[in-house]
Length: 254
Image 1 (cartoon, rainbow, N blue to C red):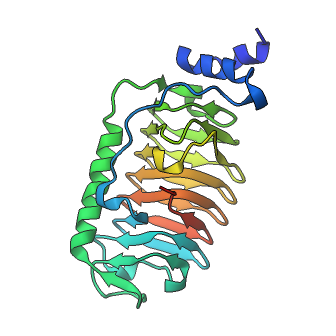
Image 2 (tube, rainbow, N blue to C red):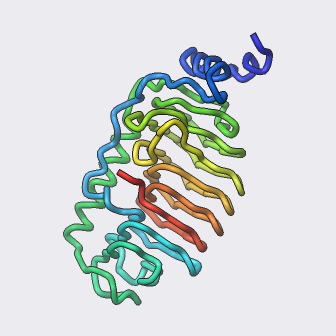
Image 3 (cartoon, rainbow, N blue to C red):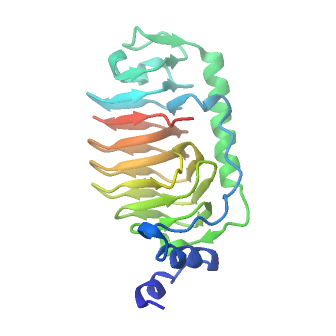
């Protein structure tokens, strides 16, 4: 057995170790798919939003958001995007703020924010993880099969990470601390994996580094900070604020 594969096995469950081992022998070096993962998280009325925030969205011009954007219960004055930056509907609870394109719909926003909270609790409450404390909280450089992952503290992506699985497979990442992605790194999908089936439930702050790329649905308890030039294929759904700096945020394909 190759020494490097043995070294990588430290901190892996048996299931993960077999995935990495088998992945070295398939064409192209891709990891073998292991199972289909947990059931997906139901986003309910939040499932059309590229960004949904309870306490506001700040932005350094120019960002580009594909999908709906909304803030609630905070006033529309806390949504600091321009109409030309959003390809989708902009929802606010009132007519305050600089956005003439905003739809005032407090009822729909209340439903969406409520479902966002239910989705967060659903993801956080999943039991019996397939992988616990993988990499001692550092997943950079790994190829991850579908499954339920759990960390009791923070999670770091210091180099590129790949999620490998089919279009119906699901990943749920439970992070009790912060999630930090380093500058100029990428979360990459392989073998048909889809961003809509990847859920990052994070209790602490989320920081996506400068000029990086991220995939999946973030269910955040606190702030999501997207640094300059970073792109996201997924959704940013948080119970506090989202900060943008010249970003491209694209809702996942169905």
